[in-house]
Structures are given as structure tokens and as C-alpha cells.
Length: 174
Length: 225
Ligand SMILES: Nc1ncnc2c1ncn2[C@@H]1O[C@H](COP(=O)(O)OP(=O)(O)OP(=O)(O)O)[C@@H](O)[C@H]1O
Ligand SMILES: [Mg+2]
Image 1 (cartoon, rainbow over the protein chains, first blue to last red):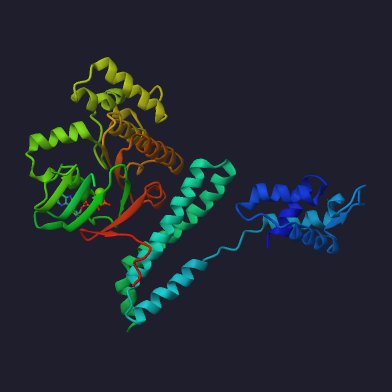
Image 2: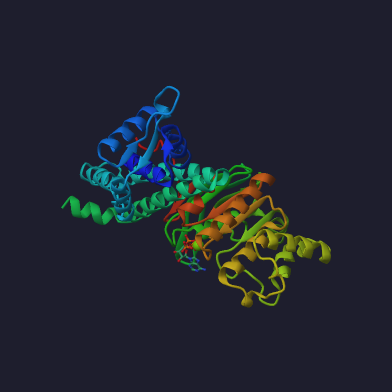
């Protein structure tokens, strides 16, 4: 989960209220999936219990939003460690698709058609992302690009697999 | 349908390149043609554009049998109504970049100053300011390709045929070129047939088809039986 670490990162800039953290999170990372307030406060409470943030005194007024949160040394070091670690490469789709392809070949189903359908779905998503890039902000464009490059990598794999279906079929139905 | 290939067969000597290809393109549509190397993409493009005449089958442009026209009539259609960006050997080496871009206008009877002024506008749009006087040998591969693109679009053609138009460009320049090409095509209702092996380029199109072994496979999400 990147939410706690993203909040720590936002907090490192300056002590902030939960409301400000949510607003900035949504603006930078939210893309159509805003962070619920409940999750913001629950996460901050957990970070506080773990000694990664301090909760300031409630300012005059009512409601949880009156509290200001401050990152601790421990929080900063956890954030720094996380930032420096490479993200786990996720070959998720490929493995699911691979299982489908092999099963299709084993059962004499049209593996090539399944791959074509996946290809069409990927390209449709790529068209949507391209449209977002064309019309959106730089943040939108960079996030869309990330998706586009991943989808493109999958598509290359799909192309290669399509081209090697004959060999794969011989190997798995031996 | 503004453009249609019906059961098109074409062989280079004994090498079959198209074996019954079908493709229908609606006016204003941007279609990406993808597929493995050697599958017949360029051949299909050349048949659709009236550069090659199929051995069998029909090619229709604006409800007219393009393949049934003589060479002279076909070259008139190509000059007046089509724009081209080819995969190889694009620019005339003796001419400057500017003159290369102006060429289709000059061939269509435009006055030289008008043609050159239009050419310069396109060079600017494609980020080639100040390179208009250079010959093709004095341009980088990517710059040359952008000059070829400008030449393909300068006449405001009804159909633009583009064969790997971003092949020599880095991804950022390729994207800028595709942005420009598609925005311009959508604004003017230009139909585009775009051959590319890059999914990111194909993603600028309205839809894609795949050519495999000389046949066209349309890609649909509902293909699974
Ligand atoms: N001038 C030619 N003479 C002989 N054979 C040719 C010629 N041009 C193409 N071919 C053959 O016709 C087939 C289709 O070629 P085509 O150029 O249409 O492929 P393509 O899909 O455009 O490939 P690429 O992605 O490599 O450009 C190939 O087998 C190719 O070798
Ligand atoms: Mg080709």
C-alpha cells in the first residue's frame, strides 16, 4: 500500500491538516480514485501509533480537521528507505494470460483468437490513455505514459506469443 | 466507405503478398494497419492508393473502381486527392526541404511563391524552422521523415497514406508528429491509413486491423466465441 508512504511524503514538506493531505493526494495521485476522508484519518492514526507522525493539539473549532500532523525522524527515515527501493516488477497480466494460452492450446480452443481479443482490449485502453494525454495536464500525461509503456510491453509479448503459438502448441501437447 | 479493398490478391512474381485482403475505411476515419514484417502491410497500402494494381479483386475510392483506371487517371487521383508518406526513399535529393514539401502543390499547378509559403508553414508546425534550405542529405533521419510528413499533408489530401511515418523518430518527437497528424486529420476530415508496428502510434488511430500472411484480420473485442 502506498497511501501511508505517500501521506508521509506529503507531510515531509510541512506540517499539514488531514484535509490538505487529502486534497494534494487526490491532485497528484488520485486519478479518478479520490482518497476517502475516513482512510486519511485512519492512516494518520496508524502512522501516529507507529511513531512516524505526531499529532498536534486540536486548534480552536470542532472536528478532526483541526489537528495538524508532523512527520517524525522515524517517519522520514522510513520514507527515505522506501523511496530508494526499486518497485517490485509486476508480471501479473502476462502470467494470467500465459495460463490462458496454455490451457486454450491444451483443450484445442482458439488461443490465437484469445490473444487477439486481449490485444484489442489493450489497444482500446491505449487509445483512452492517449486521449487523456492529449487533453490533460502534465501529471495526467505522465501517468498515462506509464500505463501506455506497460501496455505496449504486454502487446509485444502478445505478438511474440502469437507468432510462436505453433511451437508452444507442439511443446505442451507432446 | 471512402476506400475499400475487396478480396485483393497481389503477388511479386511467385511471392504472394496479398491473398484476398479486405478492408473498408469510412470517410474521416484513422485506421492503423499493424502486423508482422513481410505480412503485406505496405503492399496493401500501395494497392489501396492506386500505386499497385491488384492481380485480382477490387479497390474502390469514393465509389469508383481505382484498379480499373488507367495509369494516367490513377496518377491524377493520387496527385489531386491523396497524400503519401512512404516507408523508404522519400525525398528528392536535388531539392531543398522546402521545395520537397512544396512539390505536390507545384505539381498540382500552384504558383511557386504560394507553394513555398505553404511549405514553410508546415515545416514550422513540424519543428523544422530554419531547415527549409537544406537538402535531404543534410538532415537527420528524423528530420527527413518530418519533411516527408509535411509533404504528405501540405495539399490537404482527402486520404493520407502513411507507411511507418514515425519509424525514425524518438518517442517524444514521434508523439508530437502523431498529435499533429491526427489533430490535423480530424480538423479537416482527412481519412488516414497508417501502417505502424508501434502500438503507441496505433493508439492515435480510431481502430486497428492486423495483416497476417496477406490477409486482414479486424480486431474486435467480441471475437471470442
Ligand atoms: N518489390 C518486391 N519484390 C519482391 N517481393 C516483394 C517486394 N516487395 C515486397 N515483397 C514481398 O511481399 C511480401 C509483403 O511485403 P510488404 O512490403 O507488403 O510487407 P510489410 O508488411 O510492409 O513488411 P514490413 O513491416 O517489413 O515493412 C513479403 O514477402 C516481401 O518479401
Ligand atoms: Mg512495409
